[in-house]
Image 1 (tube, rainbow, N blue to C red):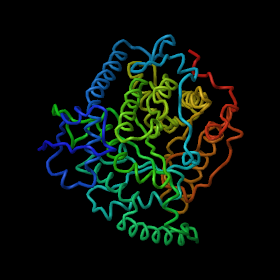
Image 2 (image 1 turned 90 degrees about the vertical axis):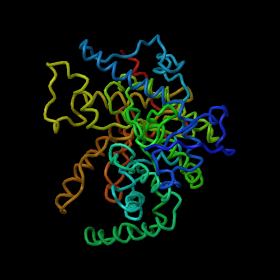
Image 3 (image 1 turned 180 degrees about the vertical axis):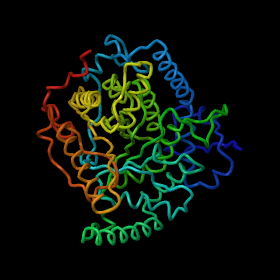
Image 4 (image 1 turned 90 degrees about the horizontal axis):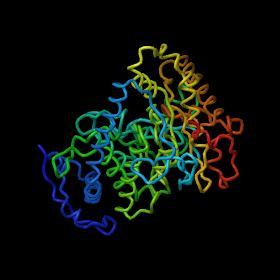
Length: 470
């Protein structure tokens, strides 16, 4: 059952240019959820959702276009190709050659994203759990010692019942340091120290309240391919999960994050083309306008999980403009995307997946393209970040098991930083994994070092035109 909501009148911050749009827009929300989650579905959130619902049709059309394009390539047994450099990026007025040459306005890197050597990831909620028990996930994350934590609203979050809403509720409570969360965080801190005394012979958290403010908070929204199960637009069509996640996270937390000096940062998953990135940019810009935020306030990393995206990296970066701060690389989704893209080619055979590491053939090419893209300055001399891959070696079990896993994790981090990345994103190993400072010896210089240097225009230029090669 879905219930038709009467939209609230917007306040000063909730106003939008087209008042008639907000007045006429109606959203359908699953019966009972507006009363069960009034702290998540606030008037400001509902107003933001109403203002963004106009992008729902475009999102559906792009997903139809994605399936048609992929199906057609398989039918015709075609390889993925680069854009014609004389054309424009679909959904924008940006010329392809201009994007490849850095002739666009990008973003400076915010201060709290200049220190991201270790990132953790995981959801801020547990399935079928009370809020007090579920919010422990957030406490563990913020006490981990990781430079940044990507609170997952996508892959790692079970898309069951109302778990997506529990995730949003927990993050809001934690960021606001609600008394219930603070009590849980203190308990979790004590438990972590007790474990560390037995494992390391020392405590790992000295001041738990201070520790809560160390980790940069990042949110991964669901991709454009997913619909939200709880909200429909005025035509009865499921609202894009990307729109819902963005509106709920930003509208619920932007004031608290800004008050604490934190950036508004998201990871955008499953982007396959620059046209899809352009739609994301339109949605981000519309939300900023709706909330009265300066253009480019919301910053985004793009997870490069699809091989098609590696043929349009500079185009994706240009399409996201002032919102874009960096790319993230990793193994699992990308390997699958390669197999999917070449399913029609019977001559293509992947080896054992354990052999497909980041130094393997097409994986090294993938990593190299990302490095070249972030090492290309925009028209203002701004470089971008390259966040290292998801670390698959999970340190669990016996001391021997932890030691073996951490050896692999450290080796992976060292290799990536030598290549120019900012270190790995993965499990909560911030209190264990040491930081490295290897970027001066990275291949072609370090994207991290240059993106975080005030005078970026003086950075090495040896790879800046790499993606222009056809």
